[in-house]
Every structure is written in structure tokens, then in C-alpha cells.
Length: 272
Ligand code: NAP
Ligand code: COA
Image 1 (spheres, rainbow, N blue to C red):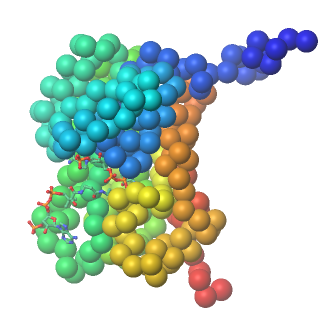
Image 2: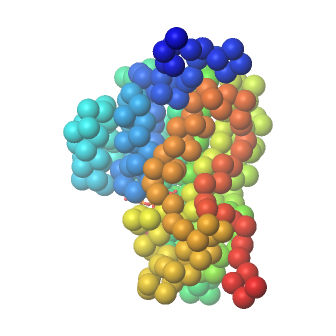
């Protein structure tokens, strides 16, 4: 009897996710808390060197120390995704130090609960700048340093991209822009050997993003009931989806939005 770990499937070839991230270089904006931190932990546990961008040095230090405490390898750099020249400079440094970038994740975002008629021009612009333009800044600066072929660019989007949600005009517009950006870049950069995809989390328990949209227990219940599964997701659900899209298991997948949202994008008819 051949041990299961030594069997090579004639169709699938050697299995990949658990081996793929050994010595790979992963960059993640917004990897210092919440969903991004969960992704950072997971990919570091799988063997990647994880380079984290965020604004607060204290949050970066706490994140990299936690990953090191688990035996992983992570470094953090304070940089704002709205600072396009700063991102260009930092990614060039990272590539010089660590080599080609295998997976670049744009997870940084800003959001708040605000009716559109109470939103200033700067409030709307701020979310577009961080989410949509910040994602473009990270991807375009990463492209020259991304492994070719085989590199992957991955955005974190949201169901707001596909479904109008009250008090979320700014986030809906920004995330819808990200979804189309992902498709356009996948189309243009596929021939360079780079895949471009997104993961769309639904409401994820214990995160800042969910807390900001659930001011009261009643609203939290309504948000949960807005998913088809009537449940919040976990950070680990998103980390697993990212690990799949960033690995060769997804080598023929590009320009896709992987909805990991409990069905939130589908809409809901509570009275039916
Ligand atoms: P979070 O904990 O607040 O994480 C946001 C991260 O982005 C932090 O590391 C933050 O660090 C960084 N960041 C924010 N603005 C930045 C900027 N201008 N430049 C660089 N880094 C910046 O939020 P989260 O709830 O986990 O959300 C993470 C991602 O998942 C976001 O893209 C969000 O839209 C998406 N998402 C979340 C949910 C949810 O239920 N939580 C649902 C759907 C989609 P600093 O503050 O130190 O900069
Ligand atoms: N409602 C309405 N407008 C708001 C707001 C709210 N709750 N919070 C901020 N704004 C407006 C501000 O009033 C300002 O507009 P103004 O100049 O016309 O007054 C504009 O947004 C920028 O605010 P500022 O605080 O200067 O932005 P910042 O760049 O320091 O921070 C935010 C960006 C506002 C998105 C901040 O909440 C943030 O850093 N968030 C990151 C964490 C996060 O949002 N996590 C969840 C991710 S889904």
C-alpha cells in the first residue's frame, strides 16, 4: 500500500497549496489587522515570507511579532496606499531584498456608515482614493516586480460591488470599480503571465469592517439575515479562498471575483 502522501494523481499531478507557499514572497496592503492579518498568518504558516503595508507602525509591529511568534516570517512597512510614489519606491525595495513577488494582495480599505446626503465630497473621495485608486497603485507598482510567469495580483472587494446597500454609496462605488479594474488588468496582463483576481468577503465576524456597519445589535442581526446562509463568515474562510487563488491550483483562473460572502450579494426579500 502506497502512503497517501506519496500518491501522485495522474490528472491532478502533485497537490500544491500546502507546498506552494514555501519560500514564496507575498505582499499585502492592509495585512496588519482583521481579514488582512488573518491572510498574513495563514500564508506565513504555509511558508511564505509576508511583507505587510499599512499606515500605523504600531499595528505593523504587533502583526509581525504575532506572526514571528507562530514561527512565521513577516516584515512590515508603514506606507499609505494613496501615496503612489511611496508605493513604487517601497515595492522596488521589497523586490530587491526578497526577489520576485509571487502574490500581491490589495486588502487596505476604509469604510464608514454614512447616508449619501450626509457625505462630503472629501468623504466620498477618501474611500475611492484608499480602496479603488489604492488598489491600482499597489497593482501597477507591483507589476514590474511580479514573477512572470506565475505571479498573482489579488484584490479584496465586497458584495457592495454587486448590490446597492443603504449608507454605502461610497463603498459600493469604490468596490464596483475594483471588480472592473480586476477584469481589465486580467485581460491586459494575462499575456505577461500574471493572473489578476479578487475575493469578495461577506460580513466577517470580529472585524472592524463589520463593526462599522453594525452600530446596534438590531442592525447586526439584519446584516446577518441579509446573507443567504444567515451567518457571518470567519477570517479563515477568506484566508483559504486567497490561498487557493494565489496557488497553481488556480493557474487557469483569471479576471474572476470569488464570492466568499454567504450569498450576501444575491439580495434578500425578508417579507417573502
Ligand atoms: P481593518 O481591520 O480595518 O483592516 C484594514 C487594513 O487596511 C488595516 O491593516 C489598515 O491599517 C489598512 N489601511 C487602511 N487604510 C490604509 C491606507 N490608506 N494605506 C495603507 N493601509 C491602510 O478592516 P477589515 O474589516 O479586516 O477589512 C479588510 C478588507 O476586507 C477591506 O478591503 C474590506 O473592504 C474588506 N471587506 C471586509 C468585510 C468585513 O466584514 N470586515 C466584508 C467585505 C469586505 P492602518 O489603519 O494601520 O493603515
Ligand atoms: N461619516 C461621514 N463622513 C466621514 C466619516 C463618517 N463616519 N468618517 C470620515 N468621514 C469624512 C471626513 O469628515 C472627511 O471629510 P471632510 O474633510 O469633508 O470633513 C473625510 O471623510 C476624510 O476623513 P479623514 O478622517 O481625514 O480620513 P483619513 O484618511 O484620516 O481616514 C477613513 C480614512 C475615514 C476611511 C478612516 O475611517 C480610516 O482610516 N479607516 C480605516 C479602517 C477601516 O475603515 N476599516 C474598515 C475597512 S472595510
